Length: 121
Image (cartoon, rainbow, N blue to C red):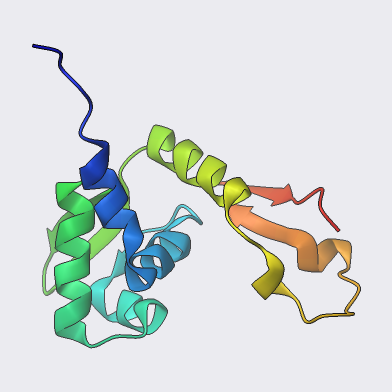
């Protein structure tokens, strides 16, 4: 019997736009509270908590309770590299208005402890 990676778990975690927004918010390398991630996810606090649980079950994020707050972050540099790689494959036509010429600053994005500049114009 062949042992196969459970890519479906990762795929399911990435499939929801709200979870993707949460991961993008976490990609700057900081830890965020549930409340901060509610704004990024654009859903209710309860839904955000469910999304965060699914991301942690998929080993994409980690968390730590400190007092009244729970802090979440990207689970590892390896996860950040994979997410960054997937981001290069995703469509970017929604990132600028048609006919708009993007400046270098507009093409720059924060990527887990460094700034990466897109080579696409």
